[in-house]
Amino acid sequence: MKLFNIRDLYKEKYKEYIVGSEQTRKHSVYLVYGEASKGETREMKPAGHDEILFLLSGDARLENSDTEVSLENEQAVFMEPDEAFTFTALSDCKYVVAGTHTTPHEH
Image (tube, rainbow, N blue to C red; front, side, top):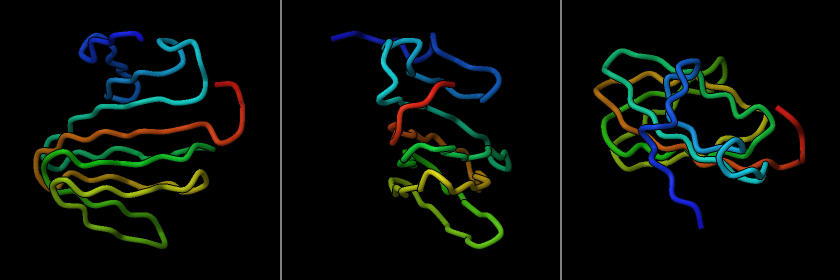
């Protein structure tokens, strides 16, 4: 077992807190915690991973050229490895992304 202090794991590049292979020394799973103020956007690109986005609080929209989905407080959505979405916070949001590597690869 290993304990993580999420607030110590902020990645400016993504504007998120990430527990990943750097912390676990494994490439099998990762966890992301994010906060977005109303009107902020984030790019959700699983890029070869299976991911579940869980909206802890707030309201948001996920969209790409083919799909638009509204998310409400405490809803979750599964994203395929080849999908990519723009996440837009419709109100102040907190979210978690849980992911796994479907096939071994390096970052």
